[in-house]
Image 1 (cartoon, rainbow, N blue to C red):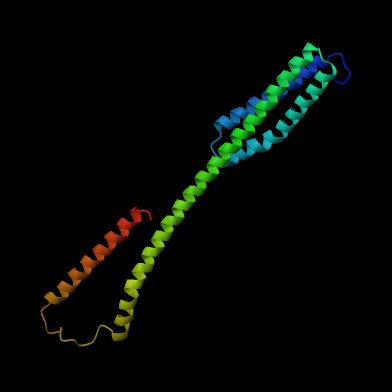
Image 2 (image 1 turned 135 degrees about the vertical axis):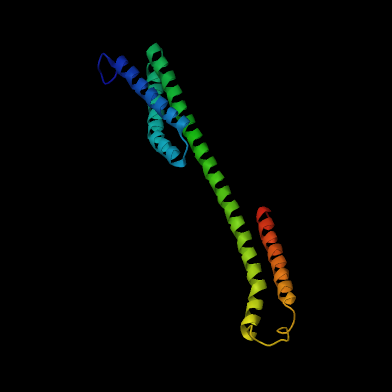
Amino acid sequence: MCNGTPEGQVRLRRLLSEYQSRYDALENAYQRSHSAAELFEIIEAATPISRAAGNMRDALQSAREYVEEDPLLIAMRDEAYAIARNFELLLSDARGALDYRIARHAEAQADRAEQLAISQHKLNVLAAITFPLLIVATLFGMNLSSGFEQESPLWFYGVFVLGLIVGLLVLSWVMNSGNKRG
């Protein structure tokens, strides 16, 4: 009897049925979950219900020990054990999936941080190469007479082509080292 009423068996079966339907709903939500936020919601909803299902299981076990040969209590206790275990497994699965997603996200962040460090190193190397050249060019300017004013314009094109080749080599180095790790 439940709460001293003759229809306690019906109420107890209804209670177990409500726990089972709540488990089914949370299990379906778990199967459809795609984000950490959805997993957090499932864990948040399942934790108190799991605790309550465990308490219900323990209460039915105590009642079973008090009335040892009642087949209804034995059946209800066994069903409560199954429900409580299902909730424990659901929580375990949801926490495992959440831990996996957190680890996968942390690994992706570590990869991005490594790529940023490589890019920063390249920029530092380029700055180390160009900074002294810029200082010399700034100090001496470009208007000094060097004797090349009277020379053939081919010198200008030669320096231009040489600069273009060096620039393409540096570009190739930057692009290729960006594809390699470590």
